[in-house]
Image (cartoon, rainbow, N blue to C red; front, side):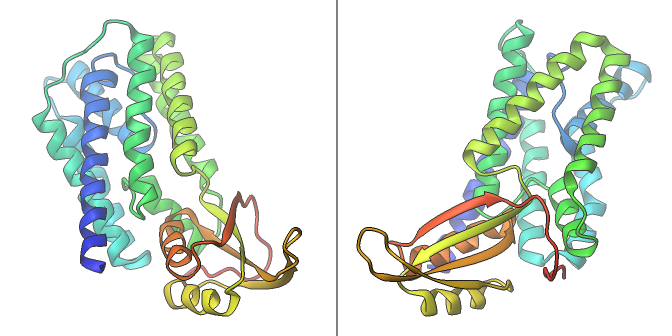
Length: 281
């Protein structure tokens, strides 16, 4: 079962990488519209080097180079499995970017911005949903979450703001506005498929509280608060298990719940702040 699960995760990571490459080479790069995070930085640097120097360096190679130091840091601070899958995603994206020709499917910049953003978001979303990431800021988010417990949103906003401003200065204000369209589209679609929020709270209503607590503790090193409850319609005794976790652990939590109590009701909500004990290492 574990071998099949790891195989399925690897396949999903490769499909996500292919979708990322398609979004970039067929929509965003030909239109000079930029993605968010490290992918956007790689796009922008590639454009600047190509347009303002006699040299050329591809977005894929830059994306790989940017992720190497982050991967090394993630290996030490985050964990091997998550980091390996994230690097596979980045390496596969680089490979696919080299294989797929850069060719615009449409001359309409709005179509490029929207469809590029949607396809990119699907690639990122399914990768996150299966407990991996597309590298870059995801690994940095986990490291900051565990070391300093700082919100990654601020850093993502600053980095994306730099991308938007530079795109506007170098290629005109319209490019900035269309980049904003892509960023908004990507964010909304990732929210639908998975979630863009780094920290989440899961509230699980179950009749198998003891078994579920043991199973979650065996898989995740997270504290659980158990609250006695009664079914409003059935009047059956139940428990509400509350657990705060990161979005990268959501895949493992879903697996445990499905295995122990498939009939459990689970509500996942955004966590905007935490006071008190929260594991950071």
